[in-house]
Amino acid sequence: MILIIVLPGITLLPYLLTLDPPITDNTAMVEFAQTDKTAIFLQVLAIIPAHLLTLLFAWIVITKGRKFSFRQTLGWESGGVRWWHYVAILAGFLTIASIVGHYVPEQENDLIRILRSSRATVYLVVFMATFTAPIVEEVVYRGLLYSAIQRAAGVPIAFLVVTLMFALVHVPQYYPSYSTIFLLTLLSVTLTGLRVRSKNLWPCIVLHMVFNGLQSVMILIETNTANPPSIDPSGIFFWLIK
Image (cartoon, rainbow, N blue to C red):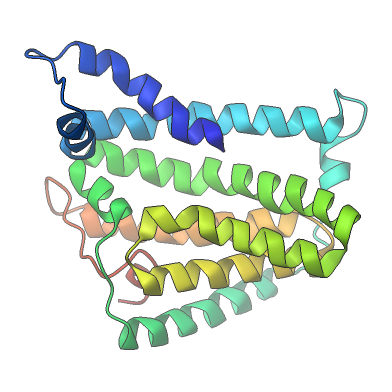
């Protein structure tokens, strides 16, 4: 996941070098990177190769250089999870989200600001959220890390550590939206619990992709009528229940 931090800065560097006059002040450079729509797009774009490289690294570690099957090692079966289980889980999650959204006011966060920057960035975020992020995150957290910790310390410790790691790594993206952070933690509990119950990674990937896919559809609907895209700062989770 370090690549997701490093590559956006590397990708942004050539664009910064083309500026005339150049930006030399660090504070001004940070502000430019956070507000210029091209700079934001380039940083988001860099996450795709970061995802692919992370997945490649995970594949090498999991297969030990192609000695073992990637899918068999992680668990690429349904594990007894049926389609209606996914529906029930999503329905329960959205019910809780509606209650949280009613009582806890939502604050703006980095994701909202990124989505407001340009329509091209919206499409890029939607693509990554639906297709690359769920696979990479599940392979890393509930695949590679969960399996390693479970073997070393047992299921309860693995459940707790992986759940917290997944939630904490997303805090900077959504801070200070405490309701969204709570729901992200709940999502992490759900996904890790599904991993424990099914003894397979595949159901986690499916649920994560469906969940993010639904959010992506609502993002496209929310941003379809305004240019630049207009996002209601009611929180990414709450677009599903408006």
